[in-house]
Amino acid sequence: MKVIFKILPLCFSTLLLSQDVTKIKNLDNLQKERFFNLVNKDSKTIPFLNEHQLYLDSIISIIPEDPFYWQQKAMPLFKQKKYELGMKYLNRAIEYDTTNHYKEYRAFIKCIFQKNYTKSLDEFLDLTKINGDAIVMDHTYSFWIGLCYLQLNEFQLSKKSIEKSIAFGKVNNYINPYELFYLGITEFEMGNYNEAIKNLDISINEYKNFADAKYYKALSLAKIGKETDAKALFLESKSDFKNGFTFNEGNSLYEQFPYQVSQFTYISSEKLFLTENN
Image (cartoon, rainbow, N blue to C red; front, side, top):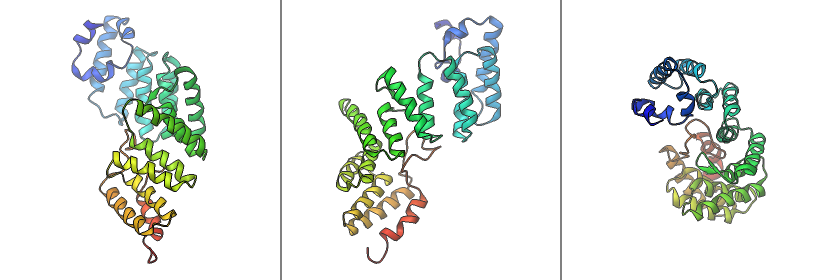
């Protein structure tokens, strides 16, 4: 294995470090040469071009049972919102995977990209039985489970799961502003506005210009009759949003996260915060 990696240019590293080297080792010399040549060419393409898909097709024809390259076909398609097509290839990755890694990824995709919360929840609950409360895409299973429950209006179950994820972070001396944000959202949805403010404040403390947390804190302040404070924070949130301080989770560039604010959020909320009575 060391010999193989020594002869590879650095441009191969992203692809080769992520798949089963044994499958390459078992290729004959002509297949290896063709494989390395294809990976080299593919590394110079843009992932969203059809050229990338064609290179991956050729790579897969050489090592058809390597789940990594099936997942690589799926990933840009999800980011282009071609969910059904992407899922077709991701399912092939899962077929050949022996680690449940791509099943975790599929559960995440169903939550954030496909927004199929029931199926995502079922998959994460099944994975929990196998792996415990493992981590995928920078969060515990509990966080994603809580997000699914939130989107299904199961607020108490959502709160319980997100609290579990936050507790895990505390044990490891880490506070995630998004997890506190969503805990605040569960409290807001249950009408516990002071508790919502408490958790949103912690989120804002970790991410000073977090427009989304400030917006929902402003709503909570309005709910408890603090209209002046609510108006000021709404305007502050709007300014932060205009300056780009919203979600910066890894995939929020491609997909709207639950309860993420938008330009429409502020337009539709002005009548609440900016009327003469406020």
